[in-house]
Image: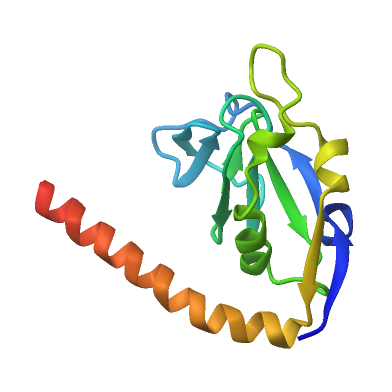
Length: 156
């Protein structure tokens, strides 16, 4: 299998989240995420395409994958992914192999900078190979989510 090395800046554009105060609503349907998870719901999305979310301040160790419209606050980066090179879910998987805590640049609060993230390098296969890999991994993720839903239903 042939891989090509890409920097994260070639694979995705890292964007800053925004203050949620103007879009926060009890009637909102768009989830608002921070590094700690779900913070509420918005009336509009900050971004609607699949994206990898990366903690900017606070909880920075793990990435999250979003395949639905969302809003992120300023402690969480979102990505606009170059789908000519990489599938969003594939980028999520390769980034989830990293412990981003190793790139912490904060003194009191764990922090990441776009400059540091943009320099990260990944070996990426062709889109066809990525598609084949995802065809194996996606059913496993779906089963995990189904099992979580069943477990949550049993607890309730």
